[in-house]
Image 1 (tube, rainbow, N blue to C red):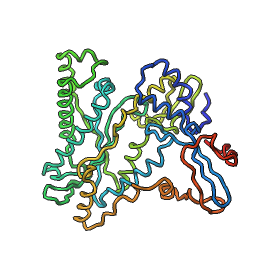
Image 2: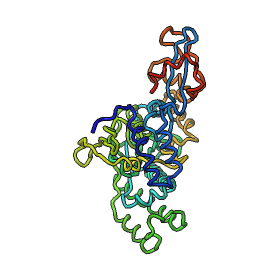
Image 3: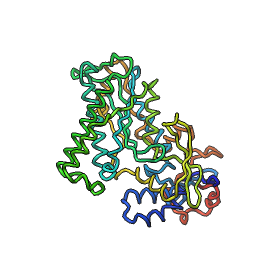
Image 4: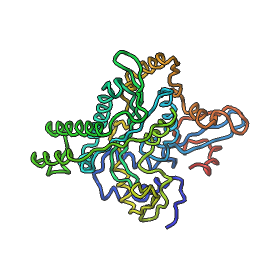
Length: 402
């Protein structure tokens, strides 16, 4: 087995194995078909080209267009960095931020897969309701904190493992309109109380969904029998749902930098794929049960495609959500109030309306509007131009196109 020569091995894997996978699974969801198509065409020229040339010396630049699909690992880096910069403007200097991970028992995996949009949304709601209820208790904080939640559905070996990473502020807005900080040095919510309330909210809500016939039970036919459903719920109630409490984020930027990786990284990065052969794919993973040792796993190509596609989210489903004083409809108003109460100035979000040229200049210090040869002005043609419409003088650039 030899390593793949491509810079985008995930694209190679899909081009080699997805046609066979699609034959074996003729009724794939439209979302998965769209993701597969986007990955196979990303940065190949099939989506067109980004073309620019210098107005003074004629220096040309041609780049194949990225697909910009949120499940494609080939084109997320600029978006991840922009998101990190935007979220940093929402952090409050001087207060603690905590990392909490809420997961659910593996017994629920089959049910969740069959009801992705409903049950993943339900998990988000239970996480947010649990944190808001406990933080509102005067013995813990007595205020509404800022909550940033990010959904992850995969583990290192690409198994289905839905869990939500949360960045929780150690301060919040009281009902009287004041800003208070938690007096605890460490995490201020008791783990057992947190786990018990989250479990109760999740399972009570799950029973309501079942009673109202909103769940798809086609893959779990035995649960259609009320007695077996109740036994299933009782078994889940008997389990301990212990959330992971991470150490306090050190520094205001570290919290967002950490979560940015979870917000935009897909089930597997290109850098983890070691080899793509005619029949198999080999990738690296960390075995957390074995001291986080790095190991390799080799799977059949069609199996790899299925392992990846099971993490494609339903259309329109947001895997990043804000609540507490960061809820979208009141975020700006609340941040202005907090800064006013703390004697600082809220500068807003200067990155929100940046165009791609301004973003690249801010992120990488590279001015794509200036010619690298003569410092003249670069003229950009419409995005996604097909190869057949490119001016003949630009054709020589194709040797450098991805």
